[in-house]
Every structure is written in C-alpha cells, then in structure tokens.
Image 1 (cartoon, rainbow, N blue to C red):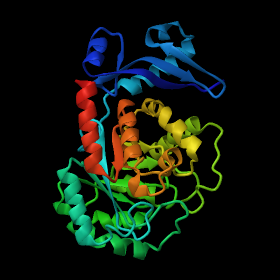
Image 2 (spheres, rainbow, N blue to C red; image 1 turned 90 degrees about the horizontal axis):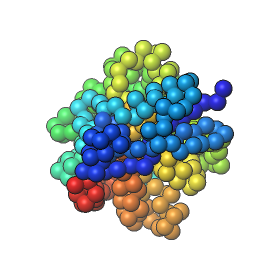
Image 3 (cartoon, helix red, strand yellow; image 1 turned 60 degrees about the vertical axis):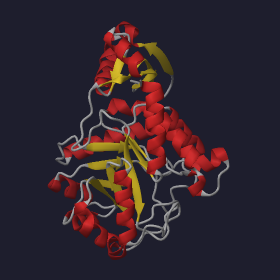
Length: 350
C-alpha cells in the first residue's frame, strides 16, 4: 500500500487569516490564527494531488483517516519548554568558538568576545544562543573531545548569567555532560543523534530538550555526490523513524525540534526542493528549525562567494520560511534578520 504525506498549502496571513479561520474557510497553522491554509497537497512517491480542505470528506475512508491525523498535527498548537512558539519565528544566534567554521571561524573563539556577542544577540531579540566548538562545514575533520571542550569550557562557566536559552552544538555526549554542569537548555547534535551511541541515553537520563537534525554522511564526506530517491520524503521518513526510536528508548517528552539540515549532505537542487516544500514537516507534530544563514545555496543562486556577503539571500530565505510557519531560524546576522522580520510582519500580518 502506498504511503501518503500531507503538506499544507495556500497560506493566508494576519487579519485575512483570522477572518477565514473564523468563517471556517481555512485552518490555523500550529495553533496560530495569524497563519492559516485552505488547501493540502496529498503526496506519495508515485503522485501528488492538490485538494481544498472542504473536499477531504470525499476521500476514501483509509486515506481520509490518515490525512485527518496529519491535519490534527498541523493545526495543533506546538509547545516547547521556555519558548513562546506563538510569536514566530524565534531566532537562534550562532556563536562558533572555532578557528575554521565556514563563515566566521576565528572571529568569536575567545570567551570574552563570544560573551559580548551573546549579549548583543540577546539585546537584539535572540531567544536561543547556539554555541559550538567543532566546525561542521563541508570537509571538516573531527577534533578530539579534549580540544572541543577546551574551546568552550570558559564560555559555559559564565553562561549562567545570560538571559536566554543556551544550546550546545556538539555530537559528543561527554561534551554535553560537561556543559550540563554549568548551563545547557538545548542539545543541537548535527549528526541526528547518530555519532555517539551514548547520546540518546544521556538525553533519556537528563530529560534535556534537543534537536533532531538530518545529515547524510558526516561533515567530512557529506557533500560528495549526495543522492536521494525523494529528498523531502526521505527526510520525512528519517524523522518519523528517529522519533519512534527515541520513544522506544524511553524518551517521552515533546521538547523536540526537527531540523531538515539545509546544506548537510544536500546539493543545490535538494536544498531548494526542501525550502519550497518545508511546510510538509508540520504534519510530524513538532516545531521545525532551519539553518539557512549564509549557506552555499545562496552563493549558487546569487553568485556571492564571500559567505559574509550573503545577508540578502539569508533575509529572503528567512522571510519565506516565516510565511511557511517555521518556528525557529538559526542565524548569524541576528539584528538584520530581526529587523527584516519585524517590518515584513507589520506589512503582511497587520
């Protein structure tokens, strides 16, 4: 039997959305009347069909049950510990305490400078600071646990005074444990919890919120001819399978974020396809995060080699993702992204 997937389509915003939801002409996205949709795309690996929500009742019984289950996940209000997901998008500010990250390696790898950057992010509206000590750029080599923690230890010792959530960007459970002695509110493991077999056990014991991130391969080899049968549905199936594994391992809480992993084992076509169809991941029932800041797909589309000069592409991508109801954006240029979002929301949502 074919497997079917449900993607919300044809969105409305602001007062127009509220009126349509009130008249039952559209359905709220993730519990917010400020974004709603009146159509869905029913997708299988063989075909797809665009359908108005009023015509769902005409579907065959088994398919209708599946679609209604997906829609219940799409419309329900998403919750996450200490985050107000109703005021989307939430901005996660990136601090790379590395000498070799693709965009800002070596710029914030001193504790004093990193803390100053974190305070600046918070002042400009950041709700999560994501701190990493190991580069995961394409082609990056692994570093030792000792070296990774040495880069970040001093920052985490002082992070308890920062008035926001602190996320640690690491693949190693021992680094997670070390940082937890100070302040860690979120685990962001780009390996999809696959790099270290002890990570899931750590998450179960501590009950820490975490991100499930998709990557194909490892940073060292992920860009060597990545391929998929269907990039959107393959990643959807990855999340679905991983969520079942996590539940079977004894993790029962819902403080989980899904990140499709733009640029992590994806070529330009894969990345653009994911961005265009990103709303499909709402039907999994969890908040969705994307890191599109300064990524290579912007270079490929706009011809901008210098990653620090890709602000325009980052802003346009961020606004697109906001209109698709994406809850969290991981960015470097937080002040500029926040300005763009505030202006766009005022013009579009009010």
